[in-house]
Image 1: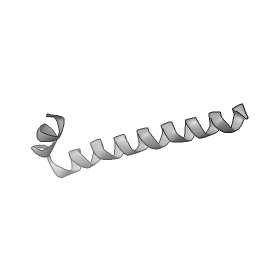
Image 2 (image 1 turned 45 degrees about the horizontal axis):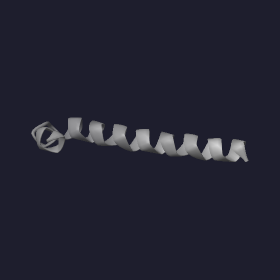
Image 3 (image 1 turned 30 degrees about the vertical axis):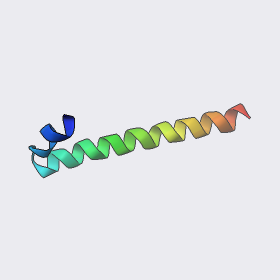
Length: 40
């Protein structure tokens, strides 16, 4: 559903959505790693 509506948006807007998702997942991974390192 979301992807269908995104595909109708301009490419620059779509890229911003993708980039935000990528950075969100990366920051989550970094937080998880730092918790694992600090917790050990």
